[in-house]
Every structure is written in C-alpha cells, then in structure tokens.
Length: 625
Image (cartoon, rainbow, N blue to C red; front, side, top):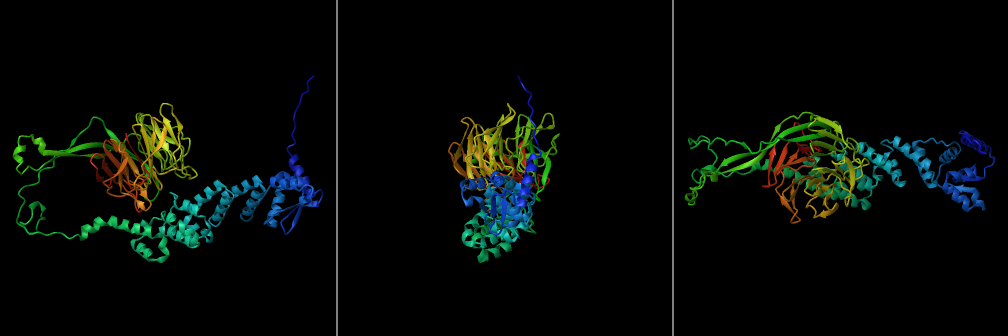
C-alpha cells in the first residue's frame, strides 16, 4: 500500500519565532545568558546566541556547568553596538551608519558572525567619501577584506589631492601609499601635491619610514617641476632623502636643453681666407667670390619594391590631456633608395680605378616613407581603450584587452577583406598593460594588470585553428607594462614596471626560461627583432623616460648598447617593417609626441619623421598590414 506525501513549509514561522523570543527577552522571561560590555548587561536566550556565533557557542559549551557559562563578556564594545547586536539576533536586521559600522565589523569579525561582516563591507563600499576612505582602508587591512581594500585604493587614486589634505593621511600604511603613488591612473594638477604629501608622510615617523623614502620618491615626476624649484628643493635639508631623484631631474633638464644651449653659445672658429679648405669656410658677407659650380640636382628617388602595398596603421591611444582616442590613422609604408654620387678620386689610386664601372663611384641610402592613406572601414575603434594590445594574423586585426576604467577581457576583430568589425573570442582573464605578440597562427597575451589592479603572471594564447583562448604556463613573476615580441620559435617578454629581467617562452619545449637582464629597467618599452638580434628601445626607468637602445644577440647570449634614440620616450607604439623598427608617438614626463622615430636595425642608425600623427598620443598600438 502506498500513500501520497506532500511537504508544507510555514515561511513565516522563523520570523514569528524570533518575534516571540524577543517579547520574552523584553519581559525578562526564559533568558539564561547575560551579555556584558563592562558598563551594562543584557539578558538574552542562550540557544539563540549559540546558534548565531560559533565563538559564543564554544564559550557556552566549555563553561556549561559553571556560573561563568551564564555570562559572556564583550570587551571594548559600546552600549549602542551591544544593543544593535542583540536587535539583529532577534529581528535578523541591522541598521548601520559610519560610526557604528566601524565597530560592528570588528565585533562581528571577533564573534565570527559572517553576515554582519559582509553587511559592513557592503556599507563601506557604498559609503566611501574623502573623510572616511582612510579609516575604511585601515579596516579593510585589519579584517583582510581585499575587495574593500581595492575599492578604497581606487577611490583614493581618483581623489588624491583631497585625500592628501586629511588629518589621518599619515596613517596610510606604506605599502598602500606606494600602490596609490605608482597607480597608472593617478592624476593631480600639480606634481607638488604628490611630493609634499609623500614628504609629510615620511616626516610623521621618520625613524620608521625613512626606508620608504627611495621607493616612494621614485613615483614622483620631478621632471614636471620648474627647474628653479628643483634647485631650491635640492638645497633644503628636509629633502635629504630625495636628493638623488631631484638631481636626476635636473640632469634630464640639462640633457634636453644641451643642443639648444650649444647652438646658441658655442664658440665659432673663424679662419682667414686661404688658410682652410674652401668647403669648410662659411660665406663672408660682401665677398665678390662666387661659387665655381652650382649644386647638382638631387638624384632621383627609386622605390625598391612596389609589388605589394603595405600599410602602417595606428590605433587609438591617449592624448596629452589623458583623454582616450578612438581614431585610426593609416599610412602606406615603403622603402625607397636614393642614389648619392660620390666625389671623384683625386689621389694616386685614381688611375687604378678608371677601368671600373662608374657605378663604383656611386652609392645609395635607403629609408622609409609614410604616405597618409585612409583604409576602408578603418577610421574609428569600436570602443576606446588604453593599455591594450594588437596583432595582425591571417588578414584580421585583433585589439585585445586594455582598460577604459578597469581591465577588459573583450577582443575587437577587424576583417581586412570584408572591411567590417566583429566581436572576437574573450580572454579568460581581463588584463591591461599586457604584452601581446603573434606568430603565423597564434596570438599571445601575457602578464598585465587585472581588473583589481593586481599584476599578473598568467598568460594565454589564441590558436587561430581552434578560435579559443587557452592558458600558457605562468611567468616566473608577475609583470605589467612589458614589451613583447614573437620570432621564430620564441616569445620574448621584456622589462616592465621596475623590471630589467627578460623571459623567453620556447614554443617547441613549451616552457619559460630567463635571459640575461637588461642594463636598465624598461617600463613600457618598444621591442623589435631582426636577424638574430632582439632590440629594446626606450621606456621608463626609475628616474624617468629612457633613450637607450639595447640589443640582445641570441647566439652569443649577450646584451650590447646601441645608438640612443633621438629623444627619450615610453608608452610608444611600435611596428617592424623589413629591417626598420618604427617607433610611433609616446610620451615623456612632460609631453606627448606626434612624431615617428625610425631605427635601421641593419645599420644602427636613427632618423626622425616630424609631425606624422595629427595629434600627440601615447599608449596606442601599431601594426603593419
């Protein structure tokens, strides 16, 4: 015989039970536990508080047969919060304000009442203001609330100038202050605000905090100060911990100004007519001497390869006023050869050369040209972003990750043949300021910063044959703002924030190994490869932007210093065309750039193409398509 069974639930029974117990409490009936904060006592139901708090449960179990078990003492708790705790136990509701939330989260954490802890965290997240953000940050550290800590730090980055004025500014822990000052989105109208707040923080406890001086001072952009201000700062004794960085900024000013100063003040050598070669003498005003020959017409320019048109395409970026750009700029790129006629030989060996072809008396120079050429469909990005990566594989452009406000896992894809944008496969992890490189069939995205501003050691790859992102083995250490380049069977990850290390991923062995370190730290460098050599250009070091060029020879496993860039910069876009590394835009401590610097990797020489971009920009990407 079988019976039909049905279950029925009284959904209001719990609230009715609590309400009845609360009535008993208010009347003093059936209460067998006393809560005391040292100032007052409250009688409650032991069974209810044992169910709410595992700490009280253990106390009651351990002292079940003693008088001590009938009393639970709550140390350092105000009467107001004691009543809030009791009211929550009997109503399942709590009302918080800034004053009580700070105490409730401490008490709830001690009693292990998870709901109250989480309620306080939500309250803090929704109630952040300039006056309370430092207090909330302190609480997040004390109670290991990482989400709240991250939100507090982001809020303080956005409102740094006001936060620095708060009386409790000096109570910010050193590690958190360093995170704030090194944050890429930190912006103040006057760099003096950052310097003075950092100095105030150190001076508030100089004995224990002077060890932070160098690390924090590295984050101050002294190059934004007036040179006279820097000289005054250098003479102040209270700036003793920062003098190295102040001096470096003064040296940078001098380095930038040196060509102008030399042009204005250099002594000119004046020689008498006839005592020096004619070609070395400047014309003398009023002279009746005329040139014996007119300069020959410039030789014709011949393009060496017109069989296939290639284009340099620059995507988005950030303007000098830190606004994100969505425009796309394209140029037809070509290498041209310009023959140069050599002077005839005038020495004894001339007769021996007469039988040779006249071509032997001519040589040529090669360089690239950029002709602005709009490409169909490539005029504007689908979405503005900074700190993103780009790759061109199988006729498609991939714009990967980046961040307008937080790191994205989205990928925008442009099909060149179909002239249309598409939504690409999403990254497994949102990342910005990461390294992106590609082989014939695979795109790599490595390191970077997560949506919570955590540096990443993870990496992933998109195999065009499968169309999905898969995980790479992790880097040996987290890194962001690194350079990346894939060549042959190797993926190079270069530098990063305060990094001079270089890792290479062997695509055949499918594992990472370390290369000898760079001579300097390179944050946001440009990277290229030619022959058997890896080239690293510029970036930002501990004291500002760099102009150095370093070359790694893969067969000799050594680094070598090459010719410096004409002007230091970081956060440039770069592309490789034949044996040329094309460095586009970027910025230093004071300005952005609209020019293009071209490095001939075969001949170790630089050239500059001025005003190529319509506006100054940094953090953009560039591809040859």
